[in-house]
Image (cartoon, rainbow, N blue to C red; front, side, top):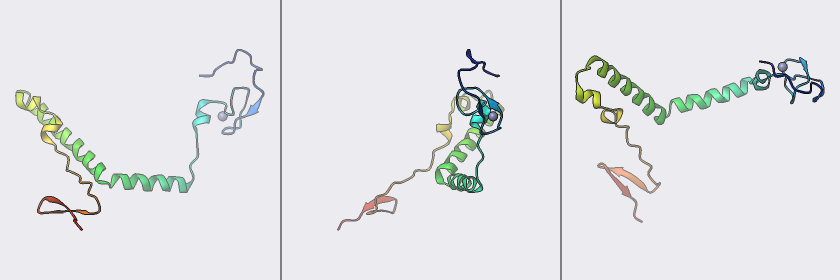
Length: 120
Ligand SMILES: [Zn+2]
C-alpha cells in the first residue's frame, strides 16, 4: 500500500537505490520492500551457512531435535490412547530427560562417575 504524504513537496525527488524509481518520500527508498531488500555476496552466504551447519551439529541442537522427536511420540501416543488418563497427564518432562552436560574446570576430570579436582 502506497503512503501519500500530506505535503507532496515535503521531500525532494530522489532515485530509489534498489529499483531506481524516482520518488518524493522520506528516506532513500521508494518502499519498505526496497528498503528491506538486500543482496548477499557469496562470502556472506557461505559464512552464514558455515555458522548454521556448526550450530546444527552442536550437542544443543541434537538435544533440541531429540526433545522435539520425543514430544511428537508422546503426542501420538496420547492420540492413540485417549482413555489412558495417566498417559494424557504426561508432559515432555516425564518422558525426556536431556543429557547432563558438564562444565568442568581445566583442573577437573570425571572418574568412576565422580568429578575430581586436581590437588597440587
Ligand atoms: Zn524502490
